[in-house]
Image (cartoon, rainbow, N blue to C red; front, side, top):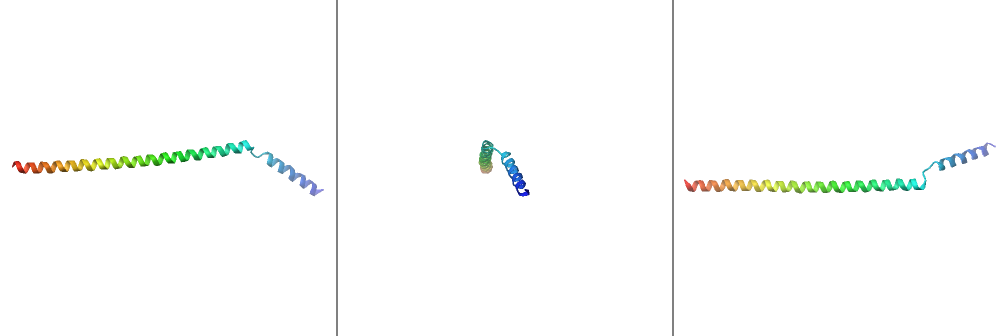
Length: 88
């Protein structure tokens, strides 16, 4: 009798456990949410790397402009020095 009652209790608990689980629609919705989250993360990663590349290009352009300005100023000073010596 104890074995029969144990089998019945296990059957009832197993049925209750399975019945309380998520449905196929809930599982599909959860998987879709995960896929959407991963897609959003990937899009953000790409946007961040693009922004970093754009910032690097802007920094390189600013450095090139700074070097060009320094060279232009140095050439102006050199030209003024040469012109000043000729006039004296």
